[in-house]
Each structure stands twice: as C-alpha cells, then as structure tokens.
Length: 265
Image (cartoon, rainbow, N blue to C red; front, side, top):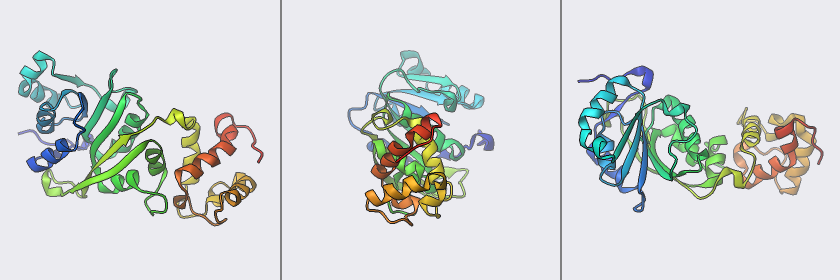
C-alpha cells in the first residue's frame, strides 16, 4: 500500500459518496475534464464515466499505479495521463475544459487562480481547505472577503457545495475540507489589466483590518475623493468594498499600477 507523501500535500480521498456528489455537480454538457493530482485514481474513475480526462500527476510512484489501473483508458485515448507539475503550466489544455480536483492545500490558491486566468477553463469544482473555500466564495461585507474573493467574484458564479470531514481521507488532514464550484461567466481581460489589478489588491488588503486609506496612504487624497463619489465612509475597511468599487479605484490608479506614473484625480 502506498503512503501519502507530505512534500506533495497528499491526502487520499476514500469516501465513495463524496466522489459521487462531486461528479453529480459537474455540468451535464461537459465533454472535456482536466484533473490535477489524481492520486490513486478513485475520482478519475468516476470522471471517466462522464467524459474524457486529462490528468496531471507529479508523483512518480502514483504514475505507475495509474498506468496499470487505467491501461485500457490510456490505450483508447479516453485518459491522457501526464507526469507533470501542473503549477508550472500556463494553460492546462488547448481545448475548452472543466477542472475537477482534490487540490493539495499548499498550492491550491495558485492553481485555482491559474485556472481562472486560463481562457480555456469554463469552470471548476475543487476540494480545498474550508478556510480557503470561504475566501474564494466570500461576498463584500463578509469578514473573509479578500483579494481572492474579489478576483473570483469578478468573473464567476461561486458556491460552496458541501464540507468533507477529515475522516474521509487517508491520512486524515487536521482541518475541514470543502468542495466549491466556480462557474466562469467572463474573463479578466474584459475588466482590467490583471497584473496591475492584482498589485492594487495586494496593497488594498495588506492589512485587511485597517482602513482602506491607511493601506493606500500614498494615494490618500485620490481615495478620499473617490470614496465620497461612491458614497462610502472614509473609514471603510477593504472587505467592505464590492468588486465594482475596486474596479473604479483601479481606473483612477491604473497609471500608477501599470506604468508607475503619478496619478491625479
């Protein structure tokens, strides 16, 4: 029996009912699935009942297990198994796809943002640490609303589908997990220059409990005028603003965040 490796953040899901609930939530018209970290292949087996699957696995030992388990599917082309670190990729597939994965906690946010930035990705259902799922699915005004929530809300319909107890894994993680569904409705390019916008969000949320003007004190006069125009209080906190307000702030400051130029209101 193979042991989970800490360096890959492995926790093997061993609950059949959870696997079924995940696959039942996948959109019915899905024809191409990308899976990251198939592990022992239990979820992969269920996904192959729905569509063809491209799976990325980083672990040498698991690759050999998966090759034996899915020999027929690999031979007929229904499964494409790649021995590769998915976090190093820009695009997970050259065609439109839906992402399904039980993501290692240490790299989950990076992989989710990677998928959201990939224009071929139509949406995703992923299992992550519950704390992270709350951040991605939080709304303006929620204490968990952060840069991750702003970015996901900008282009997705978001929902936490259900929680998964530690006992459903081998070995059991020390935290609760959640399965979340992000259904993409747009692309970042439709709203902003993403790199500049992410730098702005980093500044806005660098001290989440402080006032927004404290985090953006180098632009204090511009922010104060803008907050007044938006009918927001001067002492507003970062989590209290909505996506639209952040985009309006970005419009006023984009010269600074894209080109390093001084901005005027």
